[in-house]
Image (cartoon, rainbow, N blue to C red; front, side):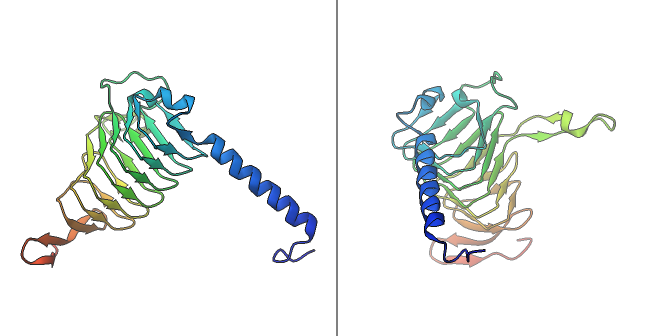
Length: 217
């Protein structure tokens, strides 16, 4: 068997063809401002793109994307629990200008998710305003739905790889959320938060700069 590090000419040729074909497929499959699929959105801003391949995309008419928004490949973005569901508000997912969503991420919006300008996320981030209830001990939990709770992420913030943002979470402006954190509540402006549930470990104080925050303070 030929060494994979040193492929013979036919293998190299096939690899080049497959690589070039995949790059072309990705370019053609990307949703850009001028594409027909962009017309399904409530608003699709200039120079924005949702990169191919997508895992899932539905409820586009409830999504408003600002300018220069980039959503990476292998993402799942949805409004509602199923395609063609009618929702209560005209805008359920609002992504402001300059946002970058990392590859493999998921956003599930049922009532209100707002992502402020210039928010960047790492890969495999999950953001949702919806959850399951547990009112009945007999019914499957997957069939029980709790009321959605709005989520907001302030401008200029960064969400590290694998961050999970749960219903009712409100992240302030210019916040760093550490990789793998789970955000369940309110995180104030200009701080660093980590953990499950995420808690503030550093904050910016005028005149003092960055100050460590002790647990429970």
